[in-house]
Length: 394
Image (spheres, helix red, strand yellow):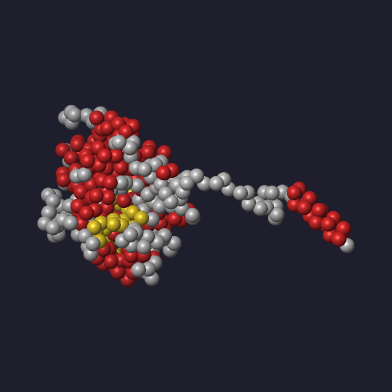
């Protein structure tokens, strides 16, 4: 009997060795041991961006987009200044033309706070919307992202998704409604990113929510909207593009970021510089070098303003996956501690430091410091900026 058992066991072992080890066909597949990890740094990066549509007058298509989505109840978010200006009117015309049912929320705060986010979230929860449209700068788009997130996850506490250590930094697992972003400034690139920034008043600092899940499904970049921007808004939003490009290009490389996530869902939106983000960051930098001064000095320079509008999206794709570093990190207390400053060209009823200005203030000191770590990248960026034309008469 023992000999029979031994023969049966030997036959089973032979069958196992001969069986197909492909997991699609073989039922006896056992996992091949993984190579031992060297340290605990990440080994991969992931690109996530919104669809982008660019062209003069392309805003008129938004009604068709919502119709194609089957949207029955749409939330249109903007701020009070923009609600009277051509970009919002163009969206309203398209919604009316295609019979889109919508409600407008025009109480978005320029440089939003936790409370202004909560107000928009309450509006979104009450409206039970199945699609969102954000028309404005980063403040409007970020507010709309937060409203969509918490209306789609109504049982979540506000701090659940806020970045640690201020919040819990939980991954977003709830399915969100489609969000279409129509940027009206050439700066934040928020139409391409999964980031929403706000001022946490209790601690007097800025923080945010970072998750690929909150990205708009479509960014409609209509260069006609850039023509109505006042000079200082063009300058400050342009500074933001500049720093987005420089910081993402000089960020810690993705292979040096730790800890390595145990699950892909835990891989952060900001992963470190990587070969794809580098391409977008450098291209944005070349556009800034060529067009930013022209766009500031001459509001009738359609080429310059249209180019900066597109550069904002390019830089957004870069930093939305690579991340930013010290300039943005130190901008948050600068903005959070403002008491009385009201900038030129900003029609607001509260004190604020424009985001792009708060970022660029520390940039000379920051890049003098970080250049010691990645001198070749800093030299390359400096060389691009040094090629900036000095004659703008043409």
